[in-house]
Length: 248
Image (cartoon, rainbow, N blue to C red; front, side, top):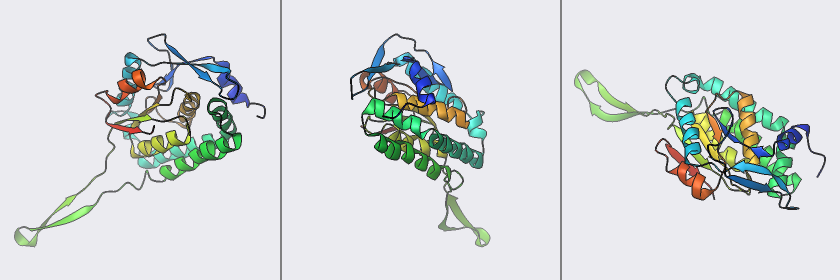
């Protein structure tokens, strides 16, 4: 691999990575850790938190509050929401070398594949869904029910965000699959709690950093790390989660 980017060097200088909740790194209430290993040489890249039930609750609560009626994310216009997603895509493009190198380190795939399928693909996906923020429309339906004076009844549909989305992604395409889930949810106005695979969690944390830099309000995009038995189970069973998207 070529020399690591300065951003990635700074990122990896933190050997013990915290959770990303409410727009910043947050320490766990517990002390269990998961080692992240480079499959090429079995060196330890660092550790991440194994989020427990209390940690998961904090992340979901953060997303729930960010979805609240008075929260900035609910008040923002679709056009401005799209601008944030476009900026998110630009930042992924700007830091694609860092993202691709990190995916290669924790995943083991060729750098050229990480560059095209993960970093490059993620930016394209975000741009696509950024364009949808102003195009989520309902329908007006004539229900063929006449009233007095030749008036007629009609019904209409209105598409609204469902709320907190729990997104769980596998190790093989850790960035691109994450964006497949994050981008449409954010475009619709939802908030997200992402749980990456415990084998490839670091790239998800870098994505969260970029999302905050792009202008996502605190709590709109959260990342919790851990395994399926503890972290995933707590996330998918949380009563404030309104939708689950899972690839595994």
